Structure formats: C-alpha cells, structure tokens
Length: 327
Image (cartoon, rainbow, N blue to C red):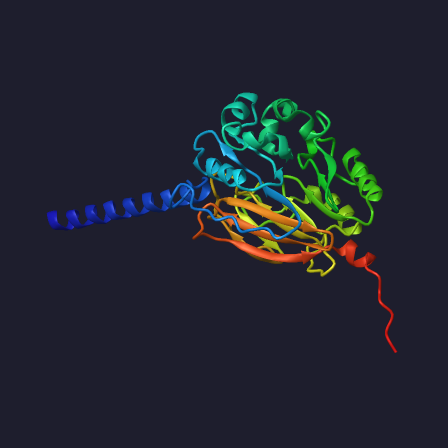
C-alpha cells in the first residue's frame, strides 16, 4: 500500500515539475531575451567602396540592461554616416530621464547625426513630449513626428506610425496628405521611408494595417525601401506591393528592431519573408548610390546571423536613357 502511494506521489512530483517547466518555457518565449554576446566587441565592420552610408536600427536602449545597446553604440563609433533611429529608442518609456540616463550613455553620443522616428514607448509620456524635448529639431516639427530630408541622390522620409497620436494615418489624414505632397515634390528620386510599426512582420506584433496608406503612396511614387522596428528581431522581405503580393516593382521592407532591447521569439513566417532572425543584435547598414543600394546587417557578434545583398533604384532606372539599336 505504502509502495503504491509512493509511486503515485512520485508521479505527482514529476507531473508538477513538467508543468512548471512548460510554464517557464512559455514565459521565456513571451518576454524579451537577454543579449548573448560571445565577447564585448566581437563585431567586424565591412569596408565601404563608394556611396552614402545610412545606418539603422530601432528598439535600442533598455535601462534595465544596456549591454547590447552599448555594443551597437560602439559599432556606430566605427561607422560614419547618417543614423536612423526606428522608434522606441529608450525603454521602458520615453521619458526625459530615461533618454538622458540610458540613451545618452549609448547612442546619444551620436545624437547630432541621428534622425529619429517616434515609437509607442515614447507615447507612454503624453504627446511624446519628452521625445521631442530630447531630440529637438532633429525630430522635425514638435508634436508632429514626420519630416523628410535628402541623403545624396536619395529622398528619405520619416513618418509617425503612432496613428492615434499623429492625427491619423488613413487616406486624407493630415499626415497622409503631407506624405503625398512630399513625394510629389520629390518625384523621380530614389526613395527610402521609415517609421516604427511595420505593415508586414513575422514577429510578435505582426502586421499593422493602419500604416497601409503610407505604403499606397510610397508604392505609387516608386519607393524602394521601407525600414521599421517594433518587433525585436531582424527580417527582410522580397519586394512586394501594399497588398502583400510579390512584385518586382514593389518595395523591399526591413524590420530592424535589433538596436539593443531584448530579442523576442518570432512565430511563423509572413508571406514574402526572405530572411529573419530573432536572436541577433546589430545594425543595418545601407550604402546608397544613384542607381541602387547595398544592404548589410552587421551583428554584434561576428559569428552570429548576418544578411547582405543589393537592389536597384526604380526611379533611376526609369530615367536611364534607352540606347538606339545599332544597325
């Protein structure tokens, strides 16, 4: 009798342990993962032959664990060029204290060459007031969160995907009308746009359809690249149209939520997703030329995930004269 109860008790202990193990696994998948870096500064920066350099990442300085952001900031130390911060530059919220303590200690030393986009964590402070206070004119008009500028032959557009705070993102909203006019004024240029929440993603947050009007306008204008963050992973998509259909004339999207805040497990695979990693910190370096661009995801650990390739500028190809056939 005692033996029987001992066996039952033993089985109960095993079942309880398995349950705890499963719950622990599920919780670990839900929460951001701690950075895994083999040695403090093990990255390698590939050389650039020619072109304008743009460096991008989002989801950067987490005040609870700054190691990864410290390393990506060290990468910026060795990389000249324009820096795009793809939203949620500081965690757990975009307060002025967090920006001054955590972002300033990492990416902040490159502040004067950073062009930021606001993220949802910035609006944990009403109206993202501290985000605009910290970045000042670098963030565009105070309280608006969208603006544009040129880098070489390329026109760069920074947008605000926090739609309810930006006065809407839908067709004929103030921001969408501004975007349409801005693209009209810069017709014929190579175009790169960036904001925080992606239209397409295999990550935790998935597709954010509220930004589709941005894609509609950019696609019509012949844009080449869209950069986003929000999901704490890296993902590259094949060129596609706003409906998510593969399209050689479409836009290539990169999700680069790899600036330093904890990675999150990506579930599934969205259509047209070509490369992705949910266990990589680093930055995306773009080298922009009048006729096209090269991309290179550079990880904090040279032995980790990387991704590289090249694409063409559609508007440049349209302007290229057609040579007459020789007789």
